[in-house]
Image 1 (cartoon, one colour):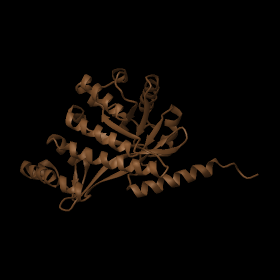
Image 2 (cartoon, rainbow, N blue to C red):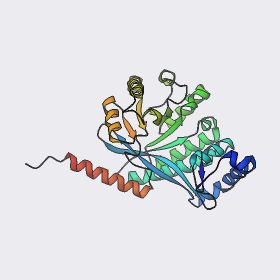
Image 3 (cartoon, helix red, strand yellow):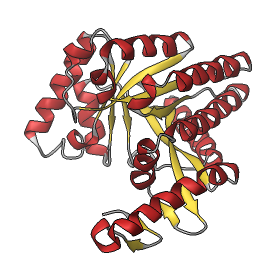
Image 4 (cartoon, one colour):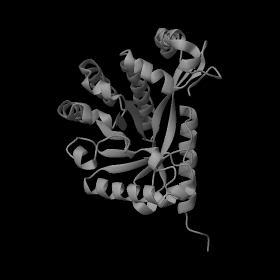
Length: 289
């Protein structure tokens, strides 16, 4: 049940009229929220398992409304998708990611930043053209290292259009990740021909990995097949050290979750990177004789 302004709201309690009013308020506040930073981007770290380095982060959206309080993305993103306004929010997040990428490169600490792309945007020619123009302009100014995470349903909706769009985005410098893998109907064989470089295994298969034999079998087989098809694998929802070690044993490439780090503001993420680098440097030093 969604939580808005510290109160549990449900459609049955509010009634359809109140739910419609909430939707209208969301849509009415959107532009101002992006201009005033009521909507802001936070960064959840990702770890590369081969060397345990923090190599990037997923860009996540937070909305602190002056009238509704903290609004969950699970509440407002479906509304924006239904009303055809998710394009503006996605371009807002992409612009922030490109700006932070440029800053990181200038500081000599490049990172891979991931932005979520709604499946419906792959068929939105205006959005795709705009996103490509944004990336090309940002790359000329020193940005790099952008991953676009598209939901697993995106290739299923219109395979040929998805292929064309993903190739265009790849040509513009983006790395493509298929998000929430395992929750829909796509198989790795089905996705083999798509211009994606990465599969992001849904957290529902990761949370109970250590205790659940069926999840272990599914995760191990998915990692093996993904590698055979030249995909990297990211496991999300990692919340304990034992799961990290199990995924490393299975050959998983990257992990994300609270055990690695919670979503944080950019300044905190930069400090997190510095601390992680310092810890790696210390661990790499030979012990004193």
